[in-house]
Image (cartoon, rainbow, N blue to C red; front, side):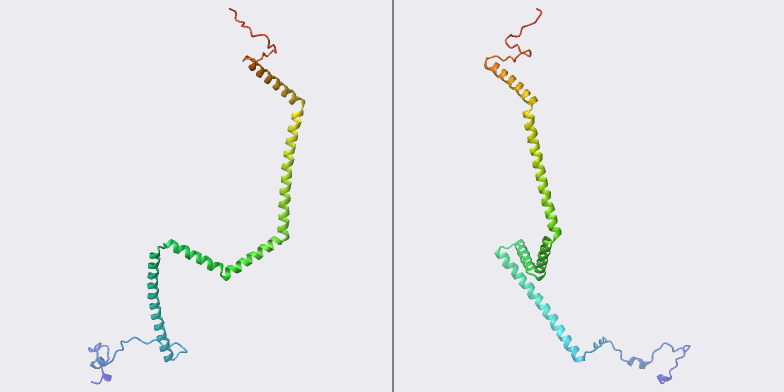
Length: 205
């Protein structure tokens, strides 16, 4: 029976059965090839893929070499007695030196110098500096005047009649106390001023 004239009636008892000739149809099980990027020929694509593979292999090789160099460096540091802290200090010092000699740092330093010069030369800065200087001078003068006034007031008090009278009384009492002790008497002078008469015992018995 010709496959083309095969009964395809859905109600036919032979529905769903494959013909023997269908088993001879080849099936493509391979992966579909990606299309070539636009603007590239097949030869150029092959060349780029070959170069990419070569670069990836070189990267792997360089990583292996770098790991070996790092191990060798660690062994040398260990033999020299260098600690990780020493390495950190050295790295920080080198990094700071690199920053100082970098164009960005140099330009920033120059810009800050220009700003500082502009600020110090500006009228506002000069006026502020003069104002602070004048305020300091006025404060010093005020403190000096206060000190002079206090000294003058104390001098006036010492020259006053009240202070001199008080000073004379203190001197008199002091001389009497010292004189009494030199004469061998510990008795203080009588409040009535009669120091020649000894104190009498007024006991009734």
